[in-house]
Length: 568
Image 1 (spheres, rainbow, N blue to C red):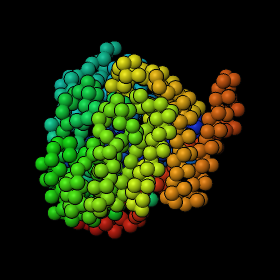
Image 2 (image 1 turned 120 degrees about the horizontal axis):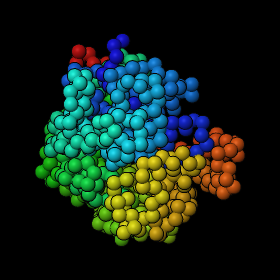
Image 3 (image 1 turned 60 degrees about the vertical axis):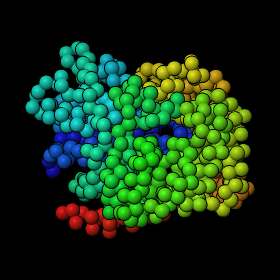
Image 4 (image 1 turned 90 degrees about the vertical axis):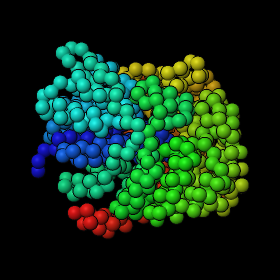
């Protein structure tokens, strides 16, 4: 088997998570991945698709998922066994800081002559610190669009040409760091491709399903992604993907959109391969009403039967909801109002009302929405413990108002890290936040601490770390009680969730006691490892409550075979 030009490696959050005692907590209860954050960024797929179209060979290896899938899998042996012209490692979100750097060291130990390149929001933000303090990283590609810069970097290294003109690149020459400007900032996403057939062919070529799976539960709950936008028109203060952060850190002063027809094509093409939900990244109304109308017309023409999940960043009117219902046969909606409190929401950067949210839910349910998911958060500006309690109490009103309809509120902490680059991180004091970490090394230190409370890189002037943690467990218990009382979950599910939350809160206190005695690296912690690991997933709710699809990957096999044969 020939050596690939590039192997893209996705790390776990912490490389030795299977050996360390870590109560990772409810940090991933409301996303598809586990607390190991094994879901690799969609950029892996677009970079691989782009490079393959230019004649390069690319392999994806999801190290985190392979570690979850088999206790016998050794990342060190795997890295030693493979070779490539270049290794790429994502440091997109900060939870991966320890795993990404340890994986880079692993690659350099076994392949000292092979270049290692990092990319993603977090590595873009900390690019100079990576160059100054981490010799295991040779290059950083900055920004949100690195398909072309990566192609040019591979070509330049192969031909031994100068790196001076490669856009978005941070690199070393001699003992100094060179920072090329971010000039590759596409104005549209029409040249971006997600080739689902490529991923399936790579699984067959390398006989490695686990290495190419986006996340652990993907076989049971397959989901595809359609990218409508890079950039954002909104300015949530704790988000590294806000419009201020994009302009300040990633060279993007305005969003880039996928044309409505191509976005509809992406969803239809995903359906050729996968029987399951397709999630559209971004609110299709961001570019304006005309864009949304064109997209809905295009998706209607393609007669997509898969579930389509749309995001709302702001409340929608009856007309838009009705248009979605007429255009998409099976659709779900997600919205993150963060809180029931209009003033807290406004401080967060979302100046709309709870009444607007309720009207949106009503409009979409009447338009045929399959389910409407609502996400609340703990750790917001101006948010107190009483405010969190009020949000949970408000969910009862929602359940009463939409009784018998699939309206699902969820709540979780803003964890484990406040995003570097977001306004709350950059202007912490002004916005009411206190940071426990500002540098890459600070976050690296926090990442391996024994519980998610100590991993938190912030607290607010309204809630301490301890209060954020305690509010999270209390909110989980109270929301679980409401769901039980309203008959929304089975008794055995409610019982399991309650037991997990109580046990996790008790485990947190036991870890606190050990840390206070200065024994955080001793056998006292080791004795808790198995239980801490078990309590770190589906803590505040059953993760299956987030499953959008009722079809496992095995229902997609005939589609995959048929699509591959047609393409061949």
